[in-house]
Image (cartoon, rainbow, N blue to C red; front, side, top):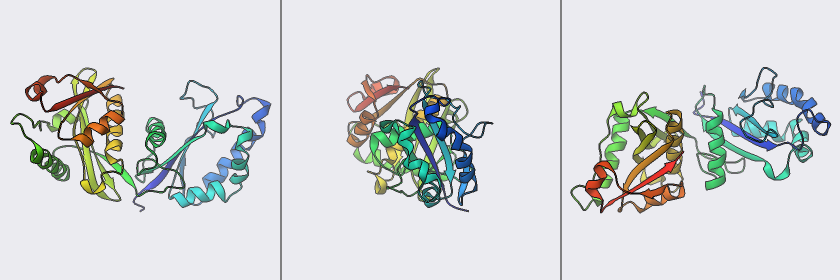
Length: 298
């Protein structure tokens, strides 16, 4: 079995409603083009309603903004369908039916047997637009090694090993006795209390992070770690994005976190992700001179 499949989301704004004569040729061809996809080598799955397409799925305020999402065995399989099948004729004419400047696309790796969620897919597109191509989200011209995420907990030895590496790194630069805050337990990151994820890049574990509920609507990001070998490839930003999505799924509308003055890269990561400085709280009051706390509304 393949190590990963490829998911894609295509967002476009139509020039007219789906029942308008201006887009009738496109709408009339949908069944044929979708059937072609279904029969193409490497096709796995596509988003559709009982009508056989996704034109009735509305997730944006603009009713003309449509989504197309599918899963393929490889990027090459998807490319073959898009550019080397009868589909390409409609692709070349897309400006007749869709606004030229409003097409948004992202590809990402997904575990075989997994169906992507639209909420995650939209975040991948937004991530690509903010950060450029990375293993978390990329385009046809910038293929990446597979980056996959797994839910985990602190009873898993491999996850514990990642956390121990994080602890050692933090301890090596600590200068104050109250500076280190390692506290996190499995019950805090399971069920409706929180979530912990770890990342595999090309099959190798390279990072982890968790979120725990600290108030009914507030979560705290904890235990963020990325293997130094893969830093600079936006893995940390990807883990953070997954934790924010998990927080929303947990019903949280705000997340907070603490990092230290000796972690300038972490501070820069959180600032780029839209986190604002806040005053230390709770146990971090004991390390107010070395703690840097941040928060973000979700």
